[in-house]
Image (cartoon, rainbow, N blue to C red; front, side):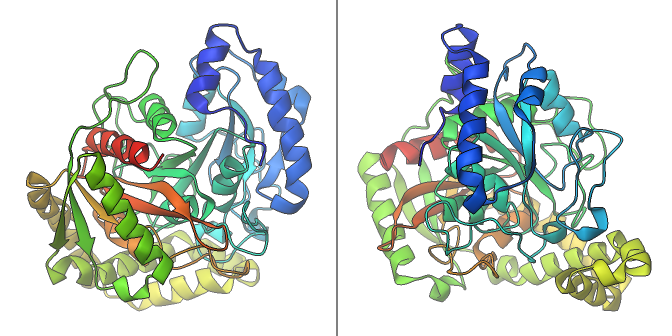
Length: 432
């Protein structure tokens, strides 16, 4: 694959005038023209004249960025992956899009999502093998970055929609702490679980994007502020030294493919060789049992979110969304409220383990990307961090025998995104 230059190197070259931003945009535009007929990572793309028209001074000047198609843009249709919103033009940009534009970033196009970010896939293929899924729901964002069309893409995660496609496509996917990046202007799947995050081809690049696009101090409901990251003069994150990492044993480990199990063992060896201290950890059952509460919360909130769609556009709703709504309507209010209380309790109590460990290590998915485009893969290994709202990151490690990417997932403490990113940088260096 003809990868474009990364986010930080491109920004540095443009800033020093060693790279004309139009040259970078031309490369991305031509590569997309070449790959998109089979990759199908974009729902809508800008023509070249409009790419150039967007050029504006700032730290993201000239950087082409993919935006998941549940994130509102005033100049591109936002379809939410559904025929209900075909051709829908929002009247206002999402908050994160406003920030990107203010920083000089160029909206390259809208990337494919599963319908309303839940299960029913779009046409996107895996850049490493067209017969395999790229994962979902942020399918197009992961594939566009992996194929080299854009150095940065924005995605969302409610259960596993950043970490899993990043692992399947061999890129870095970062899900910040819940509320650290504004979700205003993003079509919700579940208000209490939705995270906004980033795809890039290095830890440095996702860290830099997060530094620029995370919330400032003017917070809205369900938003938090994260302190600035420690970046060097080149905007690269400072690497952790000798981190203490807990290798997380899960009740789902039997679902791991033999290749994913072998890769986890290899990753541990490489991390230890580089200086990490790794210890096995078994969390109390209450954390794993709580994943049922994740589904309860998502189902109840989906029933609220899609009530008008069920009333007026039921025939156009996909079966997966209808199923969520029907389940949500059956739950009692007291059970929903209990699930939200438990979420807050466990988010706080997991902090006890981060008194001993700097990060938790687990698989990002059960193995390589499944064959076929009808299913985006099992998100179970991402569910705990999504329920708790703790930051998590997928880091590529190697490939399966069939040449598909495999990686690891690191999980950090709530609001300690900076430490997680520095440990991810350490880990990334161990796998080079």
